[in-house]
Image (cartoon, rainbow, N blue to C red; front, side, top):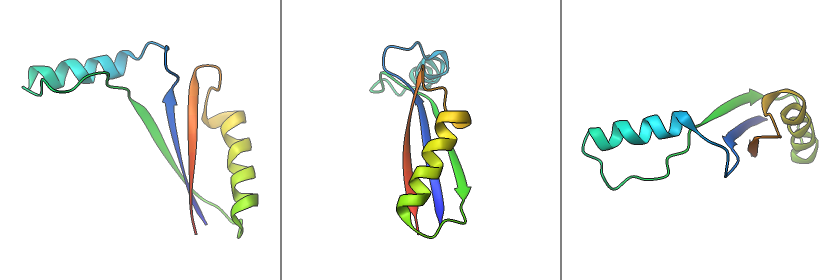
Length: 80
């Protein structure tokens, strides 16, 4: 089973990388873009064979290492 973890800064947390991307896009003529937020995607190959145990394992990984839950949110996507 494979998992993708999408980690983004929580709303209200300053995102300087997102602001830099937004500014660069405006400089390139993409004026219709606003409120850019940057994040990361982490892909994992898991030995788990059922979705429930895989999700539980990945949530533990997120809470212990992959995301700083004080300032970041995460979303888990599982693919069999």
